[in-house]
Image (cartoon, rainbow, N blue to C red; front, side):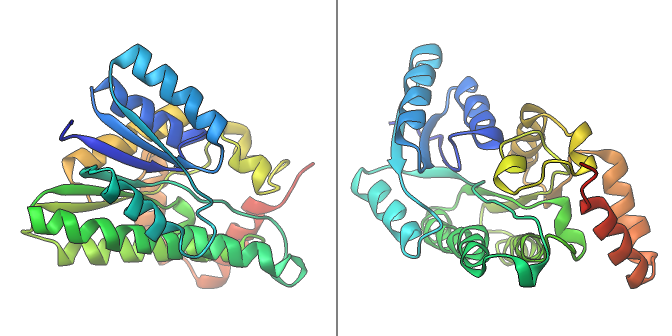
Length: 260
């Protein structure tokens, strides 16, 4: 069995699929996790045929409590040694918080934060024990500020960024690294799933392929935080922190307002 196995959540589309494809192109085996069994099985067939690798499919709704433990127990039962854990699954949602369906936001918090945390905890214990492994947590540039009209989504991504950096520091010298990938707007099904059609920033969104490559390379180098656009990185790290908070909130809300 390969010693370079990547487990990728949200692998059935978008950034997750492209991360899986890139890893397969490097000759690495894969554990693909998502809800859509038929889509995952098509990817399994494609990757095994085109790249000569081994792919395992785990069908799981990661927005449900207990799903992370089920995934971990499944890989343990199969004797799969996960070298790369890529927590990519997540979704957003547009609208004023008090007008949104609370159950939808609770499922978002479960998937974006709780399941990610549980999976990281499960696999980190094994990685640290053996002295090597890498984790990539997909956050967002949304992590750097509050997000009116996407209040819960932005908050979940702030959690992911903070959590990832803190754990990365704890793991120094262990042989295990944690990287947070913080992309800007990306042209994926996230737009439709999050009711974000008409939000202008998605008109010039990055491709899933470019974001996946940025994140994968940063993970392999053990970088702490990766932002896929240099201009965004400069703005978020050097300009936004200096602006008055009310200005930041106003700019953030304006970016999420629909033009159509």
